[in-house]
Length: 187
Length: 288
Image 1 (tube, chains in turn blue, green):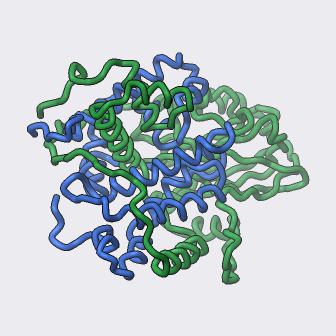
Image 2 (cartoon, rainbow over the protein chains, first blue to last red):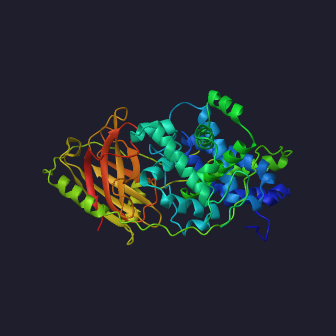
Image 3 (cartoon, helix red, strand yellow):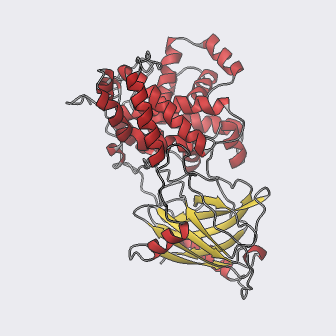
């Protein structure tokens, strides 16, 4: 997993000006895509994208390729920012299916490795879930619906939604072979 | 593969709080509750779940091109960032180590959607009446509005122009939709053109009844032959304003369409639904 050449994030951390702009090229599509799905309006998505990039540039020094891929690092930062913004705004759900959701792709196992090893692992874990479990994860993680909103939309008890989300994420976590102490499980 | 089983996990209540924090954030009361319970192990689990949620997001989020105006804003922002004293790191990213695993084979799936879609088509076609002409619609844009900052004047093609261009392509999928006997569909002619490569498409309607967006909206659905037939993919909601003879609707599939097999339009509550009961279908057509 250790890259031979320093990643854009590592180069930002080293203070290379060109890397800051390269970061836009390399991760702009991913961040924009996440922001569109987890923002309430297109304008929110644009503002969020700018905030996320600032977070990334400022946090680049925290990136450790031995602990995970650059894209997961980016996605974690983006999701934190987007969740924070969602919680600070009104109770309306994110843009979701209403207007702006564009393509949301569950990668086919075997194809997600181009994105990251972790995405490939997640895709394989998702394949093992029952459709209704997968749908709960999809609505929560990709469409930004709260568990209560998922329960309402699917006509499902909130406890069931919680259970599906819990089991689903635990399954993904198992496929990612991580444990709470950060110790690798044996593959 | 060895697995870290649930027996190693914190109790269910704590898990639920951690997962909620990782997926949607906590209320102040929930955060206080977690703070009381929190410890190093819980923090590590939180990072695990954040990481798992991020990986799922990656698996389900193909990149899409940044709008040019937003890119310009980001480049300006980068310039400002470079000109300023770097701020201290704001996020405490300490993701646990991960190693590639050798996952088991994916399950084969035989959905049998086609039979169901065909049954639905047959059922709906049985209702068909001779269309009556009803004038209405106007084009609805579902794309993001232009960003207002630093916009070099740029003429974007209209949905109608994009649809025409797509229709001219040999590799696009063209589907004629059949109207049902639903009152909203009387006299409707409709078609869809879909590009499997770019995952873009347009639906064109003439004569679809005007809707009140505060009450009901139209929603387009795509039946993907590789997916569960019970869950057609949401293609977006749209409105038909008064005094508009035609509408051209850009289709925004919320999932990648691997094999576009059928398209349907339903009437749903305002804002659309995630899963349609397909109880109020106004138009439907199968590909091929």
